[in-house]
Length: 424
Image (cartoon, rainbow, N blue to C red; front, side):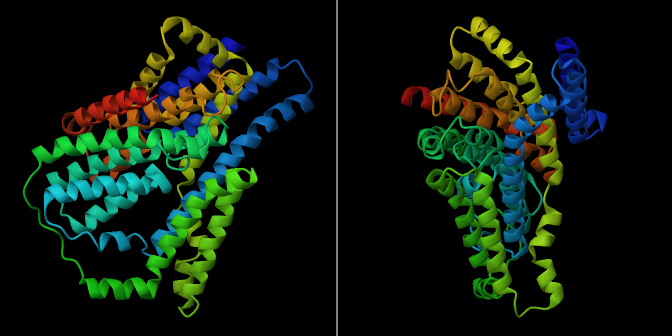
């Protein structure tokens, strides 16, 4: 049984890696792989059907909490976007200096990614760049910086990256601890590449025609853009606060936040036409959410829980303990792997490999895993959801990214690791 399940899982992972060449959605592959493995497991399960059902449901309880959280967070972001909330940021970027633009975009993306998620932040920032910059080398380079900064910003926040969210909801890290321990290493991992890039890109660039500041402020007031943006940010930041204060799972906090943003939206759209109200409604925001990604993670997590159930992950952990002289080397290798394989699935696997009884909450192993898997995915454009989005929206080729952005990402990865190890 174990060999058959492992064979199916291995084939599934290989197909996911070569998704773009096969033109088959990785979501379809993850769902069919997970469901097929559970079906095979059911034929060899020695207990009753009721016991098998209870086993699956116990695993799916924690998985569903994560999926609801992701769905709620994505909807909040879409609601902000429907009210042009992110234009509050765009309207204030008016410098023509490439040097200043690099730092503004990099630091803004870094912090924005910490309370949105890195995928949503990348989409928002690339759309913003399209509005203020014409197509060209500068915009492509900034798209690469957005990928680096979004992944770095997501690495230190419990809601900024699916990897840290997995560890947070799984009980491996607390919100306060991961922020305080990883903020400086994550910041260093983006500041150093920005500093290097400052010496290679200089001069001025042409900005697209923008409305006057007075006109921009008038439009923001009519749409309630600023109010919706700050309400959305507040709602997302309250999620870890509610979890810490009440002990309730994060999806309760995000559902409260989503309803709060929706109520503010209703207040600002009372006097609008029915068509405008419908356009800015929570229902319309739901229709724009990337449900495809949610189902992909459902498949991955179902597969990982089964591998944990049949003790495969524990055996892998024991093997790695013999191969690597120290766990730091193993975690660093996970970071390099995350540039090829989805970092969410890698982190989900490590959760099953290292039990909380041996590595309790806030053990430095978990923070190091979050750091390496988060910023490691930036080393190749296919290594993170942020990179894939940038690749699609800006038509960045694999080779261009490898030549122009990968060296910066590798340097950022190394200095981030060195900073963490020196600190702890």
